[in-house]
Image (tube, rainbow, N blue to C red; front, side):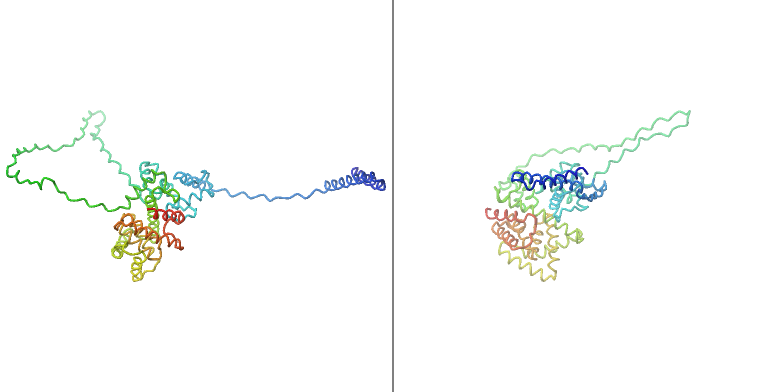
Length: 435
């Protein structure tokens, strides 16, 4: 109340002074400003703004402890094999999803960053197996283009050998039955000793007769050097090449890139072995998805190899288009759809690589390339370069690889490692030009 009276008096004074001189006008204006400001402040104090009410956020529901622990185990296993999943906190984020996608890439699976129950189990089993046998893990990692990252995929294809049976325990020492109390105890029965068969006396060795002069004369100069025959050149092995390539890649500190390529030939070998690993995993997954048994795969892929090998006898003799046209005629005459043919090609390619059967792998690759999957011709180019099932021909090799690269450039889906298409295309283009 006193405050309001003071404001009213101030306002009256300011109005009474209004008719004075200019200096008084300035003073009156100043007082009026102070008074009005005080009135506004008082009104603001008497009528404070309404408070803003914030709706509290609902806390996220607590996750089950078992689920959190499962995610921790997954992150630990990913980190163990070199996939950077970040801190092991049981709360997967972008970093963990990127690690899962990279892990799925080594398996030849869809890289969506969403781990399946089978993939979780594979990670845990692989980590346990690595710890159980570090020597085996080191050997497998050295033979894999992905190094330790590829161990889960390697373990998936090479099941652990069953443990040796526990040795049969020694039979108990025989004891005589106990005599009644107070009676003398019978002496213990001695443990039966095995009876060894008697060693026969050695037969007398007849004296060696001196060679007759006639026998000595019969040995001629032609017989003085034994003849065991000539060594045939060993067949080129895809397994051996990739094992050697992995050792060289490891000693070089990593794989060649388009910018750093000191050895174009080794760069081509590295890309072939990467593609071979991917194609093997891909074909095994397709076989599992369609429910093909090993007996059925062996039978049908063997039939395909027998039927088409003659059409692929010399792919270096003519352009890739002409060779694939002959294979396409067989496909069309069979009445099989392209989709079914592609499934067969992928399954048989994996079988050929798994068993190191170059002829089967060549037929499968030609079938896939003829069935509208031209980028598979790249691997046929690598086979021609190394002599896998063919006579080695570097020039024909370059023609087949260029054919595949042109197909990818024209929009065809890559045959292998789709997430590395740009990088692989650059490496292969540079390597075949320099090699």
